[in-house]
Image (cartoon, rainbow, N blue to C red; front, side, top):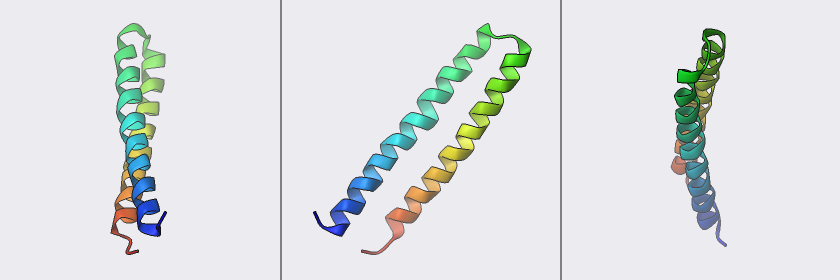
Length: 70
Protein backbone atom coordinates (compact mmCIF):
# COMPACT_ATOMS: atom_id res chain seq x y z
CA UNK A 1 0.00 0.00 0.00
CA UNK A 2 1.41 3.40 -0.93
CA UNK A 3 1.85 6.20 1.58
CA UNK A 4 -0.97 8.17 -0.02
CA UNK A 5 -3.32 5.18 0.21
CA UNK A 6 -2.29 4.60 3.83
CA UNK A 7 -2.89 8.26 4.66
CA UNK A 8 -6.30 8.23 2.99
CA UNK A 9 -7.23 5.04 4.85
CA UNK A 10 -6.20 6.50 8.23
CA UNK A 11 -8.03 9.76 7.53
CA UNK A 12 -11.17 7.83 6.59
CA UNK A 13 -11.01 5.74 9.76
CA UNK A 14 -10.42 8.81 11.94
CA UNK A 15 -13.38 10.52 10.28
CA UNK A 16 -15.65 7.61 11.21
CA UNK A 17 -14.37 7.61 14.80
CA UNK A 18 -14.95 11.35 15.02
CA UNK A 19 -18.51 11.10 13.73
CA UNK A 20 -19.43 8.23 16.06
CA UNK A 21 -17.73 9.50 19.20
CA UNK A 22 -18.81 13.11 19.08
CA UNK A 23 -22.37 12.68 17.87
CA UNK A 24 -23.76 9.37 19.11
CA UNK A 25 -22.39 9.49 22.64
CA UNK A 26 -23.31 13.13 23.18
CA UNK A 27 -26.87 12.60 21.95
CA UNK A 28 -27.22 9.56 24.18
CA UNK A 29 -25.97 11.44 27.23
CA UNK A 30 -28.12 14.48 26.53
CA UNK A 31 -31.17 12.24 26.17
CA UNK A 32 -30.47 10.91 29.67
CA UNK A 33 -30.77 14.42 31.14
CA UNK A 34 -34.55 14.04 31.38
CA UNK A 35 -34.25 11.26 33.95
CA UNK A 36 -31.42 12.58 36.15
CA UNK A 37 -31.32 14.86 39.18
CA UNK A 38 -29.61 18.26 38.98
CA UNK A 39 -26.25 17.08 40.33
CA UNK A 40 -26.01 14.36 37.71
CA UNK A 41 -27.21 16.76 34.99
CA UNK A 42 -24.31 19.14 35.63
CA UNK A 43 -21.83 16.24 35.53
CA UNK A 44 -23.30 14.97 32.25
CA UNK A 45 -23.15 18.45 30.70
CA UNK A 46 -19.50 18.86 31.70
CA UNK A 47 -18.67 15.47 30.16
CA UNK A 48 -20.50 16.34 26.93
CA UNK A 49 -18.61 19.63 26.68
CA UNK A 50 -15.28 17.83 27.21
CA UNK A 51 -16.19 15.35 24.47
CA UNK A 52 -17.15 18.16 22.11
CA UNK A 53 -13.79 19.82 22.74
CA UNK A 54 -12.00 16.51 22.10
CA UNK A 55 -14.04 16.01 18.93
CA UNK A 56 -13.12 19.50 17.70
CA UNK A 57 -9.43 18.77 18.36
CA UNK A 58 -9.70 15.46 16.48
CA UNK A 59 -11.43 17.16 13.55
CA UNK A 60 -8.64 19.75 13.46
CA UNK A 61 -6.08 16.93 13.43
CA UNK A 62 -7.92 15.22 10.57
CA UNK A 63 -7.93 18.48 8.59
CA UNK A 64 -4.16 18.84 9.12
CA UNK A 65 -3.62 15.26 7.94
CA UNK A 66 -5.63 15.94 4.80
CA UNK A 67 -3.48 18.99 4.07
CA UNK A 68 -0.18 17.09 4.37
CA UNK A 69 1.59 16.53 1.06
CA UNK A 70 2.67 12.98 0.23
